[in-house]
Length: 290
Image (tube, rainbow, N blue to C red):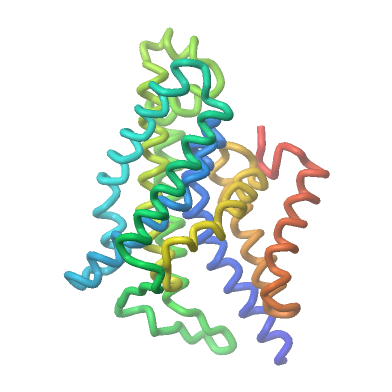
């Protein structure tokens, strides 16, 4: 019975962790999977979102996830500005490969150093009414600090999927990676569409950052832990597929949770990336790749 308890709780914890991983990765699925922009600074913007949630929570007592929702337009505008600089400096000149990657590396370090100068390296945390509570379902103990971010993350992914598949802008975003000439024939500006999509990818960082600081305390350099993981999930699920991102994130979350429970947390990343390698060997396009 004890073994069954461990397995079920590890499974549920993995699914909840996967929901969080999906929120962290969805922006990369848009920028890298659809737009082919290797935004290596994405986790740094997530940490920036965490600090925005921390400041509002410490000053006004606002729930971190509510702060994440309120910060969406700010991060959208930030993403649009970053893309405009990236386009003028690199894409317009046809230098958006190696030099563009260096640009995002620079943003990563500038953001991290700026946060260190502003907040130091001490861990910061937030307070919310649900953070110290759990949902008791007999042998299952579900912490609300994991459940609430997971549920809101699923809602966010559902909204994004509807926008990408049911609106003209969404279909244009999906088309811009396949045939820009055909998109222009439909009277749509590919640069504008790419800017909207990239801005949306950065906007998701506001929500993911709020989820992160609810789940655990944060400090400026903690985003480095997610750089490899977000790209791994994006590739595992299939480039540009939001359902694939969710399935890949859930799968990785369950594998990491099971490994950490029965073999120790130090083995979890290795097993997770081993799963990625096996999947790519069997299906190079990922689980839901085109």
